[in-house]
Amino acid sequence: MSATPAAVGFTVKSGWASAVVLSGTAADPELIAASRLELSDPADAAARQPYHDGFATMRKEGPVLTRLLASVKTFGRREVRNWIRTHQKNGYVLRGSGIVVGSLIDPKTIGNEHIRIHAMEGQLFRGVIDGACEGEDLPRLIVRQRDLFQQARTTLRLPEARIKSRLSALGQGSDGPWRAEQKMAALAAWLVLAGAVK
Image (cartoon, rainbow, N blue to C red; front, top):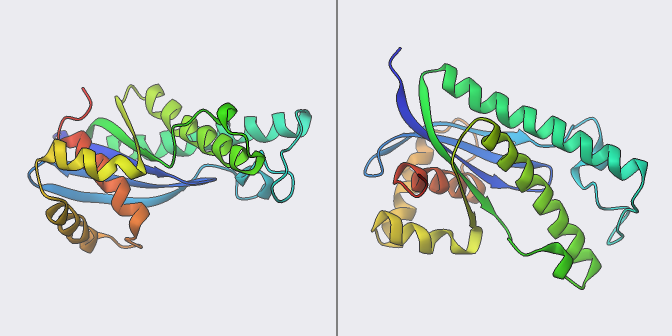
């Protein structure tokens, strides 16, 4: 089987991510796969929000938090790595990964505890994906959700309406849902195909 250039994109959520593979070119991307990847063990409900100890309360340092964080890192990286390798085995040469995140702010700078907890979890799950991609030698583009379309307009040299129309059309080849999370992951992969990472 000949190798086909492709890129992966992820939209990071708490405990899971939307993952998309696109192949083709920046001018003509093609949807290969779209999936929901669990980044925490579904059998361990606390692992989805490991820094939460009840509503708006930070879990204290200690063996429970240590176990939950270790579980997330082990489980999540394995899921992402296996997903990447599946597509590599199917003949795709991945040029890189695009990772869409809610925020890049340092959680330590956030005064409100509840918002800080969410930021810490966002950082954790982003790190799980980033670490798995790094382990597979994939260059990474990390972009905030609110900056995604601005970067896309610049990189793709297309108006936003054309980008959104193409993203909607890509979803016609998806067997599952094709909502905002999947479209953002696809756009991140599209940026990688367009050379946004080297």
